Amino acid sequence: MRLHREGNTIMLTTGLVLLALNLLAYFYLFSDNPTATTLLGIVSLVLFILVVQFFRIPNRLLTTGDAQVIAPADGKVVVIEETTEGEYFKDRRRQVSIFMSPLNVHVNRNPVSGIVRYFKYFPGKYLVAWHPKSSTENERTTVVIETPNGVKVLLRQIAGAVARRIIWYVKEGQPVKQGDEFGFIKFGSRVDVFLPLDAEIKVKIGDVTKGGVTVIAELVK
Image 1 (cartoon, one colour):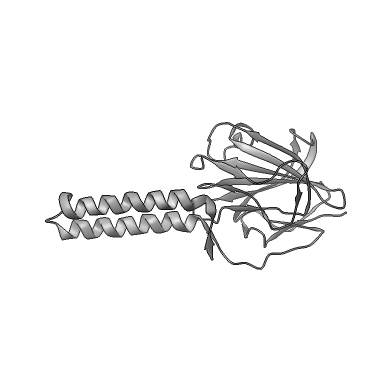
Image 2 (image 1 turned 180 degrees about the horizontal axis):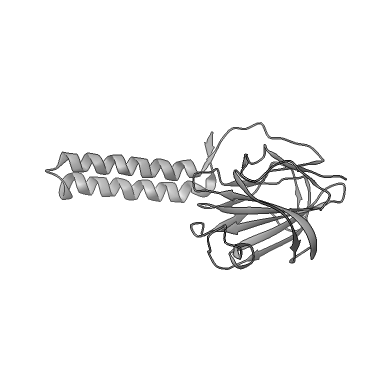
């Protein structure tokens, strides 16, 4: 396991603030109360571990396959439905949504290999990720990848009530490889995947996914 570079500043800042707080408590605030300083130390350690684990990148054997669509994120499948995608395709698509809690790994990975045909960032609100309007009103990005077989898959990173920053590493015209990082969402949110109607869905509501590993669908072409 390694730690993601997006967490370097947050982990360092958190560690320094907690260290300063504990030193202040030990020498001044609770100098005559060892129980209080011990409890503060334990709470600080737990808090720091929670922050660090958020930025972890576990070692994994990634799944690859030209016809397979791989989960772009760790989390739980909360939506599987046929819906109208109105931003890019403007037609009916099959949507699979994965909700990420603050305890999940938050690396976002390319579900397919291909060329980025479309990218757009939208500033917006921070509604809870399961809110019906979060996919159209929250801060979000939209990425469309066209596979070598000409099938287009749309990904949408959606910020939530806790997540306040979306990171992306792709741009239009860029070739991308299945399983590589395309972005990161800090502190929980959701990723929507829009697929052709004839895609065969391989997951069900409530399934837990592993980014880069779990096959969520298979493409016909």
